[in-house]
Length: 239
Image (cartoon, rainbow, N blue to C red):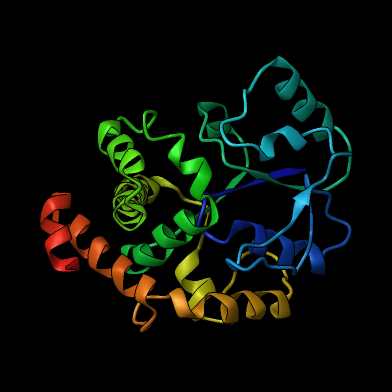
């Protein structure tokens, strides 16, 4: 049996999957479970290169005949697979998928988490998001790191808000809000509470309501994005 655990950056997916694998050693996966976090509280689970579907751990993997044939072949054996993917290709509409989702209550956290943990990668996808890349280019050339960080967070928050709206159509979900605020949340599998608690402890300072400057900034930006304000209007609240 193959189940895909799917999430966007910033939604704690590597930690959630690691916590499940830690308590279910018979489950095969395309990542290797770990409780290790970096200085940004990002889980450092690494790819399981021996798994035939390790390519699905990449952002926007190409779902080609080789991938689909491998999936069909794995379905024929008795092994249980729980696999990481970030792909929202229509191919997965007919697969067993568990989506990690969140509400707008945690929008400041998921947006900030996405930015802090994938900063360099995000700069390269602005054009894919259809945003005004000229603003980013101007801020980078001006060397205004503070303003660039704010504007990047604004763009990330817009994307996360859009995803939150889209994710309402998903039926089989793990709600990040429950993972964060309810230590007894049900996610369909037994999981390692120590891994969860370690992640919570490392991320608490970035949750909504925290006095951390980055958390406060993200909260202001998130509220403005939800209200539909332009960046220039939100920026006035940040000054």
